[in-house]
Image (cartoon, rainbow, N blue to C red; front, side, top):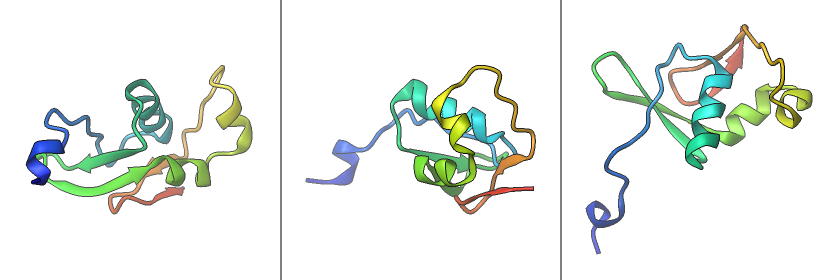
Length: 84
């Protein structure tokens, strides 16, 4: 069997400058654990995972979505996340 038979064709992606909470929402809404990060030309430049997001968000953000604002979190272009 070839990968082309089992891969996701209509992928959901995210911009490298997107907020961590936007990435988490896209993953949650689509039941994904990984999200491709693409540049302005739609070239893959990284992958962010739910584990990456959990590693940078305080546990209070993971438990409840109400009132969240984490302006200093950004997706890093190589798939890892960091806090500025």
